[in-house]
Image (tube, rainbow, N blue to C red; front, top):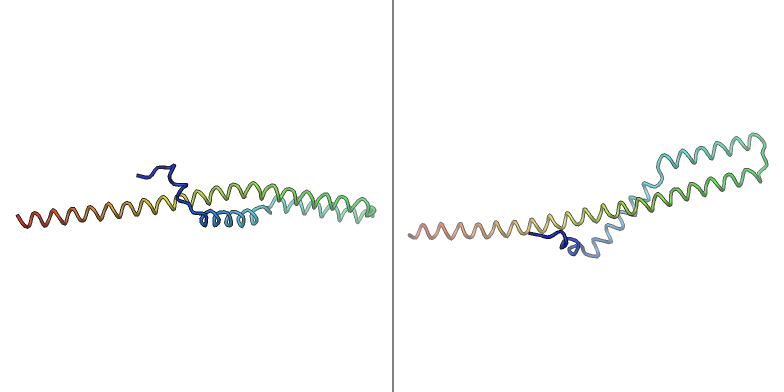
Amino acid sequence: MLDEAEVPKQISPEMEEAATQKAIIRARAARWDLDVAVFLFAILIIIIILLFQEVVIEVVAPVAIFGLATVWLIGWRRGKQLYQRFYDEELLKLEQGSKESIEGAVKEVVETVEDIVKKALRERWQNE
């Protein structure tokens, strides 16, 4: 019927753009997970402890900046990894949907041809 190699040709640029947008949205939502939140909370606790211990702001500020930069870097890397995974998943869904719709159309045509042949055979038998 339909070759696996033919399926990617069936995806239009619009479908690919939709997959890209869905992957971006999913990756943005998933990159800030519980691990990042716990790490950010730990940084906040360290900063509060340092301030209560009356450590000078010249020491506290770099700790806070380092913590925020680390959180941003972790989120950015995670988002990049998740984007690629989600993009591949969305393309796979589109490929499967495209393949199923083509197979459904082929099945309808086969059934239609089958009905025509049956009808012709019935008419022939009735005429004989």
